[in-house]
Image (cartoon, rainbow over all chains, first blue to last red; front, side):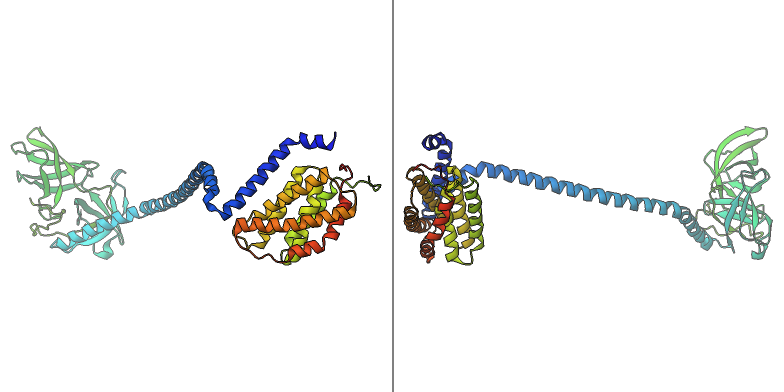
Length: 285
Length: 160
């Protein structure tokens, strides 16, 4: 192929070179005369692409920020979960101690309001579910305890000391079948003997059928048994029905016998009448 | 036709590449940079058998030189002048190839002066007033060297 023909055949190269030359020329002219508007024209031409790329960059940045925020949030959530788990574990661990502390605070209030010399004791065992079972407290004869001393809690009467060892004593709760306590009804003023019938329950004996006893009526100690002074809350009448010449009065005990942790031990043979405390352990008969 | 063997087709490209690197590296010495610059634009780039390659070598020489100077506010004028002169020399080499070294050298020396004028005119248009320097004089004085180098690299298939 002749050089002339080869030169002509490469017309595309001529076009490219022409564009290259023309572009460079216009570019050089635009430096001297900015009024030519070449730069403006180039900016106008590339404007849509610049806007598109700016949007794309903004979207990428926003997405990366979202991913970063999400990752940070996930880390924070994981940390918070760990802390919540720790707090829950502490709550489980501290719960019984806190409940015992709250009960001790209430007991301390009751002790301060009781006009009797009482002794505080911790419940170290609860064998009420066993036959002839009861409560075991951590005070005994060394602390001056002896059988037939009354045991109360902020919520109500618990029972009496059945047997006292050197450093611990067993308590016969009110709901034991062999437990008897002198009680009286708040409204009718009728007195009787409370005998245990089962867990958390007891019934009052020797109430005449002539007495008007209603369910929901409060039951207090009568003081006649010389174990408890008059007016300590025992429970509430849950059911009343006639039986022969007397009423069968079922009582729901107010003291939570299965959840006790601390109790107060009353002195031996307390006076029948004492000024009533304002706490829950002492009612208004 | 010359009796010596035709040089390899790629040899001018390799030497052009060396010259381009030399332009970049000789920036601290403007006279020397001017010699490499003119040698590439007028002597080596037009030896390419593909015109587009010749134009690209010339444009690259202009941009590299102005880029290393870092003195002009609006570069591009040198590349435009280089492209113009390289294509002109290419055109002359194609259609009126010299058959003697003296003619070859004389023509390149003339193009050196023309290149200096056009280069400074384009740079003045693009960037405004600027110092001329004496690079053009060094390029003219060393034209026998690079012109003869180009003569030796010149393909023999060019028409007379």
